[in-house]
Length: 245
Ligand code: UDP
Image (cartoon, rainbow, N blue to C red; front, side, top):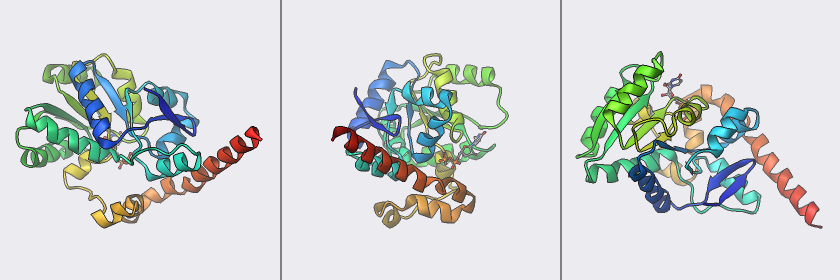
């Protein structure tokens, strides 16, 4: 599958339906494949970190989670089909897994949070099997791998934040008894009810990032770098045009 290059990171150009179909093909292959969900923070992390860059380019599925990535792709003259927030794609995967009594393992967040998320998901998606949970701090990796192998999940939500989750998935790709792993940042916190997503009206206006920053001011440091990301896309576009002249 050819990828669209957005400032050094290849992104799969798919609709949500196509992304979910691909996710289920990977789940069926059961070879612990992984999906990453780049936003500008992830793309920028890949610029200065070779291991991160490698973790993204080796992923089996790369979906554009951030609206900044959509904007940069448009500026570069290679627009992507659809903005795909990781949590939306994951929710659709969970909904469809529930229909066939598929299983999910929740990995990440502070102690007790994944269990709360499991409780809520169980109510929301009847038929879904929550086959295990593990907090994202102070875990023994060998013990965790054994726990996952025994649980044999179709889907693993890996919520350790950037870049830990991407590197963890790259390290474990092809080594676990699991279908698909997905790096989903704060999604377990959201499913547990610990943090809230932006209201739908904000999401429609592509302002979910602003809402999250207003709710968690410590995120301001992350969005401060956004203008640099967009300016880089503009410079690259101008450079490409000049080259063609
Ligand atoms: N987290 C974790 N282990 C770590 C660092 C972070 O489990 O060593 C969790 C953290 O508790 C939170 C999630 O990873 O649940 C990251 O959330 P954040 O909203 O910062 O991620 P983003 O969506 O911005 O990548």
